[in-house]
Length: 415
Length: 80
Image (cartoon, rainbow over all chains, first blue to last red; front, side):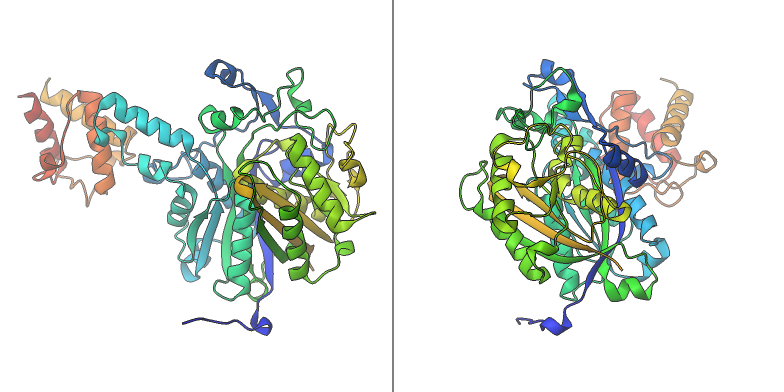
């Protein structure tokens, strides 16, 4: 039976919690400082070169030690991805004032973006090869190695009873996860959803990506390597971690006295329908326009665009063209936080919403560090390359991925 | 391999790797009810026994294993 939801019955969707574990900080406070100060989280990992990589550059954050937080049974099913996501989610739930008692009495869901578990898959297959006995891989291997590792582990640990699945959409996974949560809440199917994105950081996960020749190879100073929109960019820098948001209906947030950070106004999506890796201009433009239409706001109402801009020549140029096409002359401020974080891939769409929310909360626009000479397309944008103290009321966050998947989210400050 | 060595080694494994409470480690303790080991933990017991004793257990080995004493006996029987 088809269910039609009248526009008047649509719920307002707000963000009531956020948590982050990234290469520029292990919590919101550290990340806010890094964003304000333009601090890079990019380092050398020389092991990658001996492994066969072209580039040794990566964002880096250590795996958290969960021994005192979770039981052996819980930990044994968690790989790098679930560990990062768990720490980010603890911070997000605390922020949202959601505790175990609330989760026991209310239907809370989880939607998380993830698109690989390379390290866990390889470790378990290596073990089976060595032992020639599948039993000896241990009971946790399957739960670490499935792509839904974050949603299966966190839903079990936090005893969640709502929607529960993983979104795989390449480097737009985290953004689409928030978009899906927004849609489910807006339509009244769920009241509260934990959502976000995660990205493993290890040499097994990124080798085939490095093989495409799209990673930056500047080797003098790792912090200068990621330079979105700059003429001298020569590729992206892989990175990772986890970012979690608590998204819920306005009514639910008000009813329980939750801190309301912002309202999600629009989620636009599209698919390029062209090349598997080369981005175009129309797809991102359509996603941004759909988000604006859904938000029912004029492009001039957007104060800030957090660009997807990964620091690849074609990707940045096409996004710059798309932003210019949608916003025209004298458009919103634009910056690329990937200049500091590197490309957090499956996590990026969620982390960049959090970076933008932190800017919104603290009234500043984080710089695109290393942006010294914008290229022709970028120079038409209102680019920020030095921290700007500026009030943000509404921002748009872009995320694009392989296969031509595009997502644009529009978020407004509350109250 | 002495019986005492087997008992001591298994007890250490349970406390260190399986985080079983030391006070619960008594021969008559039921593996499932007292030590709270579930079906997945039994898979990891097979892994731990292989790593520590060099013997491979299979599912059927556990058919008559209810208590910790039964488990000690099972491992001891593999060396006889």
